[in-house]
Length: 300
Image 1 (tube, rainbow, N blue to C red):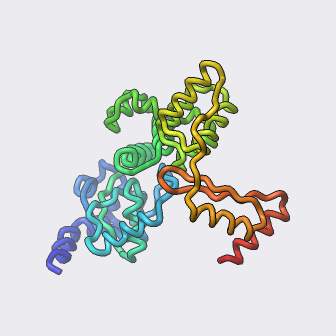
Image 2 (spheres, one colour):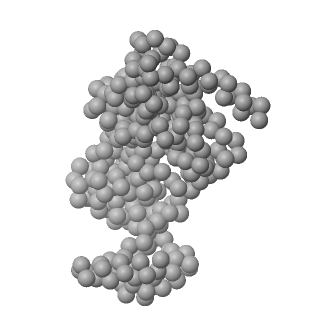
Image 3 (cartoon, rainbow, N blue to C red):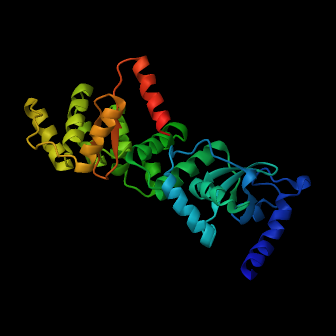
């Protein structure tokens, strides 16, 4: 209780300053801005809107629940960062996982650093924060770098200074965006690593890229095996895979048969190294699709 009282006392002066409409701080030059910018204050969650520039496109629900459990026990240890939009209104710059988890817990307030920034600065802060701290997949990181180039007009050298990465590392991520969108999706879903992607980049023909991608996924090829496959392709177009396709575990084989019988379709199962995978249910027409949809909804 003493700790909570102390926190409220520390934020009382700032809260009063922020809640004074006669002296609303709109820029870094306004009186009192130096007391607010960079300081920690408890803000109502309802006063904060999500950042439209957030580079992360998906949030793992299980991870959010674990974070919510930690916040329920220990509170929000690391404050989020927001920028002031108008009187009593803020926009998230970084810390969306903490923000979302706090909502799950049912908190009314959250500790936050306040920044006064324009949209470009906010975008740069959000992108750099996520690249440095979040476990983004390689394509998300590459897209963040590309946005820093396109929307912030940063050079690779400037990005190197901002995120603390070598220029060669940044260039390798950016090259992944030259891959076919299907392959990029495979990387985001965990079927391919960055090493696989780098090996495929050297193949210019999209059709050949996709052909080798199917072999990688279908045969669970390692990065080294993929590099050999690409080397053989470039040497003479030979993309034969000598290793046999790995067998599915019994529970998958049995489950695959049961699912196929239930849907009346020949289903396929693909598994990534991480253990996640895809269950593919084909359909032949709109009517067949609606039939399968009804079966899925009926299962719920």
